[in-house]
Length: 356
Image (cartoon, rainbow, N blue to C red; front, side, top):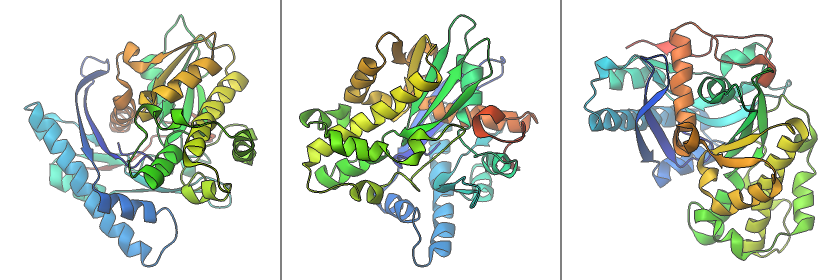
């Protein structure tokens, strides 16, 4: 998995042989600055973008292959022991609106299969889009398989570049949606003003003061008031969008306000749609932002707020595990989407298979 945060590749080895979900080993390979810059540029129209996208797809295949080879080497596992690789690819455009209806995740999956000698499942989102869905979020089906409990009503909050929710109620249909920015704006603002890729623990944000007028402007867009199903990405929440709302605010105050934007968009979505939840479990890189987690706990007082580590999968590896599970669904010819989440006309088998 390589998500909207563009930090690198999360590779996981997941064992399903006992019909459970066992996370055997993990490996992280960061993107170099040149690749990250090209991916950021491809989120917007630019000169020669078709050629750039094709070249970057090939480069990504080599990066993914390197991560996979290191993961297997660390575990003394042969490629022949692996049934399939689930590779999400790198999202550069996500436009689920009816007038556009497309999503683009870059990777040359055929090349990845060739480089690893392992079958590859990729292009998970297109089939759901073709069936009238948003193509995202897809992780709620995995959350149901991994985290459903007959005694609790749980919300799983994945705080990646974009934050999304999954509601797990043993007596109701699974639901979920993208609720707004997670780390995407926080990381971009931090990079621009401190030179660091992210605000470690939210320490820089903690030195600033929330700007209520700015927060109100950021929250006033239609996305936040629109009902689910809904999904989003860098096409909406990007640095230029943020900059268009700014005047001459202090950088640390903007960072503090962005923490509050993520907090409010997550907590209000839970309070509006899932007020009966007993437990909130966080995953994704944002779950490591102690300042953000502190604000979430204050906003969701009365609900248990914890990390998915308590449920058996550490926060950094939930999404990568989800795409291993989705690849398994594809290989077994089982559906991978939840129509109530994405808005698709029905359940669909997701993904394209490139056999080794």
